[in-house]
Image 1 (tube, one colour):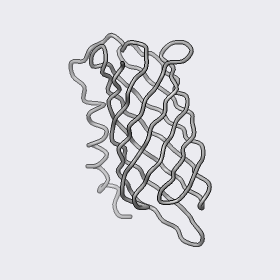
Image 2 (cartoon, rainbow, N blue to C red):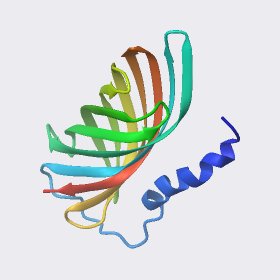
Image 3 (cartoon, rainbow, N blue to C red):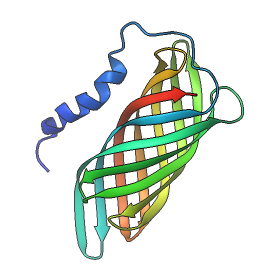
Length: 169
């Protein structure tokens, strides 16, 4: 795999937009449906038959969320397409996101299901956590970490770091 220092530029590209917010709007976004778009960096380990594969992949996610219950909690569904290890990847994940207010920042925890349909079929549980901050009444910048376990065409483990924009409709 190589030195962990080789990963540093990629992690900075994904994480810095979330952390390096200067002047931002402090009122939380309006409660309603939202569109989500952003890049994801994934480290994958998989075992299929007798062969094992591991490596990095870059993805683009596009999806939506709808509010449920109290506070800013929501149900979400995201489609993901990308390349890298283990090849061209196509999948989706969705679930419940519980959001906690921390003054100007919001943190969240996700629990859901992930399905990969390419290069092979895997499905399994997914957990995530992250932070987000409103830029204005409709745009929110978010970043997070997640993990997935997939069963089907072998065993798959994904660890990811993501960032993106949430546009409240």
